[in-house]
Length: 109
Image (cartoon, rainbow, N blue to C red; front, side, top):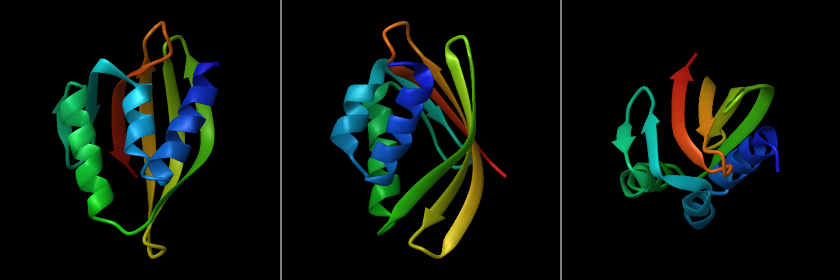
């Protein structure tokens, strides 16, 4: 599966709040940085996701433009929270050679 396809699957699993699928998609050394959170390691990253998922009833990620270069996919996203709040986000996803997500950087705006 190419990295764009993996990224699209990641956004779908995020929208479904499917923590088990995300666990399988992340490399052990996965890290996350966004405008509110920072984590290092898969376990810490999954805890951040669990906190995010617990704080909302529904979250929906709609990918727009996706750009792939080497081990990186950049995605423009529209995220809808509980059907009310909508935010524009740019995600930068980094992948291992095996197609696991090793880095997620998310920027609001």
